[in-house]
Length: 364
Image 1 (cartoon, rainbow, N blue to C red):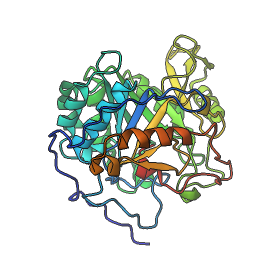
Image 2: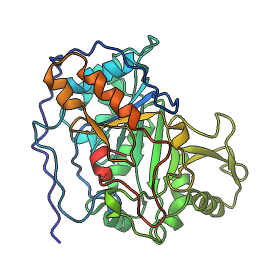
Image 3: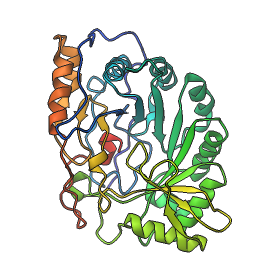
């Protein structure tokens, strides 16, 4: 089947003038199970320069039109409201956020926001790093705190195969630039796949540690109704840790220094022996090591749909609330979505139970 060429010409204007709707109300960001939301993920666009096999199906995808994608000033308005309500970290995602015009200015505007407690809003970003190298300095100067870079193989042929169009040289250049730029943290995310990169996991960890980067390994998730999930390919978080330990000839134990669970979905582990003793790695086991009980996140799609859960399809329309101009509409949408946050997801190891939305559309 012919792959759809992803367009870059439909990105909205980079103008950061204040949005015409002011969000002045208050929302208590606590869901019905008493989980408090501190972390907001915002997708800047639903397009990507890659077409990773676990993220996008072969079938043509529908993307939001120019008018449907949130304007950058609307992103700032929403982030400012959530910061007042208790969010202290915003992660910019995509699609691929480095394709969005005005990214550096947006980071600067978001970094200038203040949280409920009066401190600066922490702004971080996830990227495939294809276009990152020239942006590293400007993003750091604009106030970006940290970067998470996706990299599933160090072998050029395998990398090209899983991304369907990626340039490994560019990615490694972006990663090296990020590692030396003085960010608070840089993380390397790898989706672990049996029969594809399972033999590379220890090498990927060593590659990251040599650059002062924290490696994290992710279980495949049956997004898009399971269209991108291949039973038998998923490595469990436990299998990942065993593969890394075996590749290093070392023991991997829970990292108790900062708590086993990080601020996000990863649990962190420590190498106990050998030349890499003391180094940390993370595993994100959405299917086999459910972290729903500690979920502290909400997600905003590129078209302004608020998602309470990555694994569910219920949404609230923040874009319509912002553009409708009615006082209290944004707050009401957020409160309705908080109620939809579930106790647990319904992912199954056979690929069933996932949402209809693709990972591409929500930024993970």
